[in-house]
Length: 459
Image (cartoon, rainbow, N blue to C red):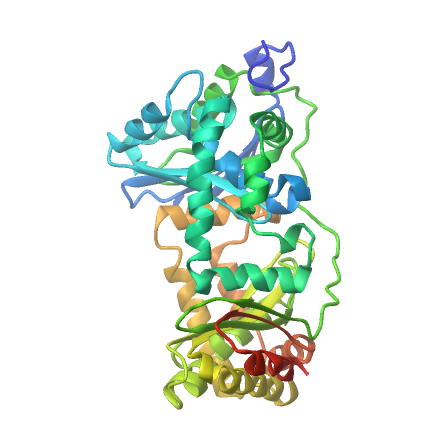
């Protein structure tokens, strides 16, 4: 049979089972932290991490599609589709989906990014079969009815309005546009009012069929679980939906390629009647596969990653010019961003920008001290481990790793890579990244004279 757009070949379940391939990717001690992977017929990958000491499990499905896969007229379709998969299947209504997880005290949600989408549920370990059945049903059996598309359009427009009412969030979308321009990475994940209003159920349904076949999906599960049981339950759910294709289908490879960002000295100002001016000063960063990303992580932590960081100390502690100031990195398959954010009074925006620019230029030329680097390495190692202390974080790590890198790295290996960063590594990446001419995005009530001076920050 063919079900909801998934092509099915005439193979029996026993034939399909014969070609399932299982690997142990990370060998844990006594099974704890062991990461296993099984590839089912049709290219569906299932990765799990076992943690017997907890009583919960998080189950997620990652789709190899994000807003950068959209054409201009489809901007917002990935996020729209994320909403619609919760609206009902042939087996469950929207209320059935939500009440099934609520009834066992679980939590269920999803998120859309520029290069992937994830749907997940966190439940007690004994309720994992229910979570698997519900989430798999959503991913393989969504109806995408015109009535639901029209109803959900209003909710998405309200979400766009909510984001636009938060300039501290909106300025990051503006910075992406400043750096990438009018291509897919520069457009907002949510879409715009015009593009969302123009999307129809037929267009979204075609987008769903194209991007949600098993070769584009990674199933990830972490917690007090048994890998083989998870594989059997996922396989049964996908077979029930008729969503496993032929044995010769190969999983979609991670994204690759190189995109050169040549934007420099660009300034975008969005005038808003706000109490603060929100600014992002930044430049091209590193792709997520670049080996220098470990050194960049240390540099980012030392510059703006905590209360002892340079930017926090100079802007907030010593001068009291901002409440929130930090730096961040974003890595994509083929490029990246490095940015510094600050929110301050409009009258102080030029002082804040000058301090930030002076610090970036100083570190680019002279580097960081050994003490700063040692402190940043310790902070980064600690935050890496503490950030993986629940099953949701573990599910995110193994699912994203399989989808984006095609392999897994143990926590010990990650900590070793961070610890191996040398002062020379940090100084080299500081020269490469911070030595570039920056661009600037600003949201706030700046007057003409103030706005005309913004170019001084990127000169």
